[in-house]
Length: 299
Image (cartoon, rainbow, N blue to C red; front, side, top):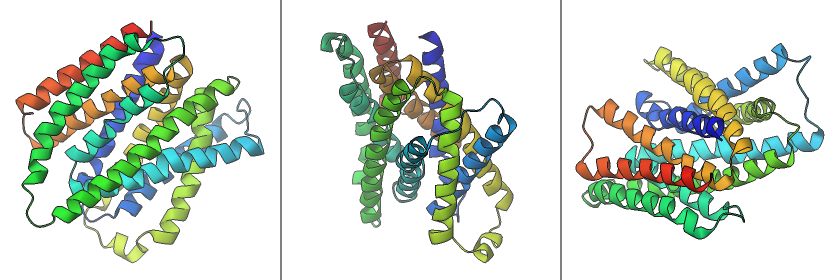
């Protein structure tokens, strides 16, 4: 259990980085950023499979189709919606909307043996933290003059991303438990290759042309952001998350997703060079207590 918890928290720390990357790469479209990140993820997964081809298990046709569907739901589609929502609504509000994923995963993935009374403390602490954070953050949205329509379009896109990843978390955990013969690394590599193929097709259909990309001033930063998030927040984080999904119940994994929100907000505050407001600091405390309460309930 301890290994699963540490893996889940580490995955959250790496996923939190993707919330600030769109702000590091101005001028790059959401499609280009999504494609760059996941082509890097797919390339790393393909390289890992080639290096271990003698020991690697290869997917059946049915498993390959499952990997394609999962990659669209939990990777390319999810991140495209999220990146575009950050462009329209900034970092904090989409982060908070994505932060509700643990609630839905906990409610929908509760194991039958676990009583609601055991799950309730962690659930209430997480909800309280979200309420505090939203009260602090959404006050900014109410003061938006022009461009408010874009902000709420960003909120809608973030809700779509939330639905995509909630469904992925539930389906991915169920698939891994049905196939214990497939290791976390193997499944990550299959998902990675499928994601890379999907991202390449996305870029060929909707991405910017090469001339537009070559005219950008910050090409080195863009390349580092795409490769870094593709390998770190993509390949490594997926291995860690799949390890957690194999070792822990879906509801506890859901609670651990809160760490993604905590790290994303931390990175955002560091990037902006500001201290969190009192409500945001208390919300972070409540999130942490919620994680600890959920771990205790699932022992």
